[in-house]
Length: 497
Ligand code: NAP
Image (cartoon, rainbow, N blue to C red; front, top):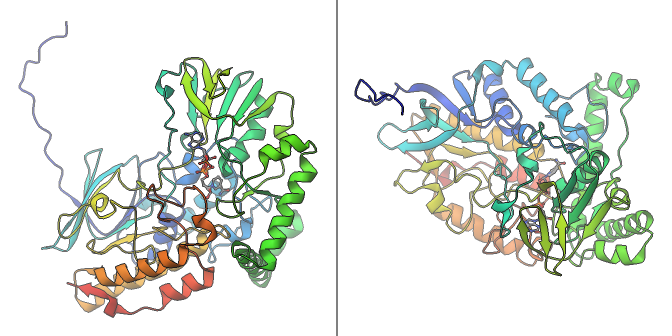
């Protein structure tokens, strides 16, 4: 028996808050961009609170084998920091992390990062106009501005399959990858067929004895027009006109691709023909092709760009299962056709809880309403940046700022620019806070949802949509439209206090 304590337990005193102008939640791409732009604007009084033990955000969490970006790397770098080190057009996760480290070092962001700090609560105080932010580690911060740069894809979603807790083998989620688990020679069940599973399949097949891929819904797959970058590419990157031209090329090529999400366009027919031809070329067996051919419109779910997905499926030790999963048992997966699929490891590439991406933090606004309560029907904001009732709170990659066609960085940069302007406006006008008017936010979202209704993104189940069916993730327009909407500033749409 342990010895009884000899002294009465004491309650640890709450530490005095550390005060900053800005607290940023999350050291991913958008948190990093915010930090760099604050420094470039001469604002050095900020911290970044990051729950993980390293910089990277999604690129820290999603360190599964084969992880790489699915837009061309020149567009997956900030406009103010081209990367001369990309080794190929579609960079792998470690390269992206290296890029993020180099940007953080170049702009002096690293001293501002507090790793291993999980924000539990953020409460806005109307009297002082400050946010009070508490971490699970017992730290307290106060700040004028609170930037949530966690994005929509930060909370891994485990599948709600009966019996999953009874599984006795190794259990992994792609978005919380444990690199210490050795899958060599194992029989692996891979659940999911989204962008992540498509990247994971070939590397998993390479290292394990057998892979069974459980497909609930087939996905459209386009070829990835990848190529290595050679010495010439890397030398040319140092010439600003070259970098600008390459960025402009990819920007416009992908914007042309955006037309492919609208019915009756040339781009749509081109994308559809390309996807059909890719499937036909890579999967000679007609019966298998039928099982891999989606029955919903291309673009409704995120399109997959992969050259090794179908070939990986054709390997003799890889099996595609399209029967529904009925339950998970101690040693495998049982499907609705009564078959038992024995496995040593379960890999869930089942995506993210987008609807509740911020519910781990108790964010309390000016009327004591929590963000979770405000978002009971699903997240919404104005231009993904501000939520009525939550003054001085700025969301990065907030609701309806994702696209199916281009780089998220193109949405991060204007958002960061606007948040900086808003901060400066508050500071210069002598106000203590800015808060979007509820009617403005309502009108914005009504128009957005009306536009999304009947669009390609409303025609199937995907992470873009909440349980209610409302689209909580997609920006339905072209990138330029978003940039212009954010730049067209009308302070009359906000309350100041
Ligand atoms: P996802 O697109 O949400 O796909 C989840 C997959 O899991 C789907 O195939 C889904 O089937 C399946 N699933 C979920 N619950 C299931 C269940 N209970 N039983 C069986 N299957 C189940 O997630 P993701 O693949 O992780 O990708 C999410 C997003 O992350 C992407 O769309 C992309 O934006 C981003 N991403 C980006 C990159 C990159 O290159 N930068 C790489 C990976 C991911 P249903 O389709 O039937 O729902």
